[in-house]
Length: 233
Image (tube, rainbow, N blue to C red; front, top):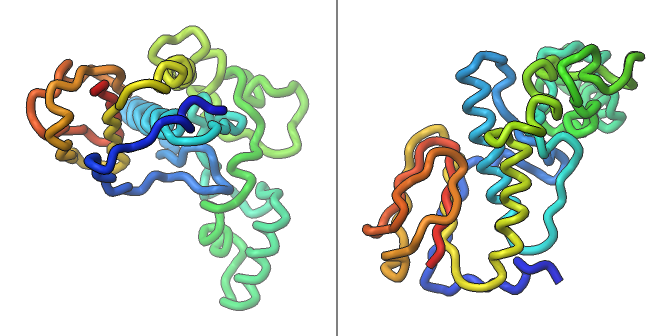
């Protein structure tokens, strides 16, 4: 039995509203800004870590799809239609073109967020040609962000998304006993979560970025955009 499956949530803890969790059953990879600037990289890393914290603290068995552990993003929306390979996506494009009288490129913009190709692109191993996946051209185009998002750049980096996943799995094993207060902010603005009175005095366990206050001395948690935190009660 998965250890998290043994944890129950006391009724005194309200469910915080979920704001844009940016994930669905067909897309397990984090959807993040595709820009390669440093500000974008920092933001997408924080978002990926927050999603990792959510996945590893939920009930049941955790599934990680290829590339999710390094925070691979969805494919660029401006890719030409011929770069998309998913049959279901192409069928939807054809239907939209016929029904709405729009171009293929206009149609792909309407369906690309749910395209299964987002989770099927080659794993980005290095910053070399084709993301280090192969010397030959793979079955489909490699996303251009392989230059900054790849396994080689993260495997020995303690601040990387990959390292955070490993830490969270280690923490998950220790969460079968006791109560935890887990607060996640998936929005682009600072939010305040009001915790139950029982959480007063809770001690800090883990955060996605900089450490917040080590002990909950008031009944609220302030979270910066795309941040998460865990407290032990």
